[in-house]
Length: 287
Ligand SMILES: [Zn+2]
Image (tube, rainbow, N blue to C red; front, side, top):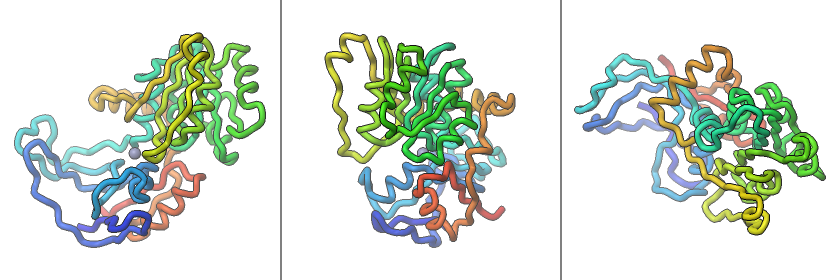
């Protein structure tokens, strides 16, 4: 089978023939029909998080189960593997599982890529109001509105904190979801929460990134900062829930796909994904 192999960090991927190991106990072999390109794949390719090479990235797959290993009882060949991109589970779970946003909470989402847009739509599902989206790419702001944000503005705008104060009737945000992989974005989020507010850190910058914490205000106002990996998701619980919401028309999934590319054009797809204006590019494989 063909795969896009990373042999050097920071270089293009090589599309080449690879052989798969046999299916071991507890494993499943899936024939991949499509795979989303996640920002984490791009970070890994750049070497931002280290790791061993050569490597094949990609973790947002849809396909059909071909073979199951010994001890796998709850899946069988021929079964479809649902595509819920990790950005859906991560953004949605950060709001629902980690922050436990309640109806009427004011929510700010910093960074409106795939994860941030799903945090926006999760906040809407939870009944949050207002839902304020911030990004440094102005072209992403109307997209955030189309996913349900009540307000959106440039994260670098003068008086961004003051705008959040006004939009929340003076109480600031109950919850800030930091979906941008940046230490500065975390610091911005900390300045936008109110008394008892929570900052959820979801976006992952390069390994060395740090943020400063305004300790006194943080303690005095009884605030919280929480990390969220993959939205704290339990796939058995969360994936069916997301599928139901999608079928009810309350969770946009199709709108997350910006463009589809064949595997041979994966480097073009990655270059376009890195441009910042794309939500998700998807690699599609012949049937
Ligand atoms: Zn991912």
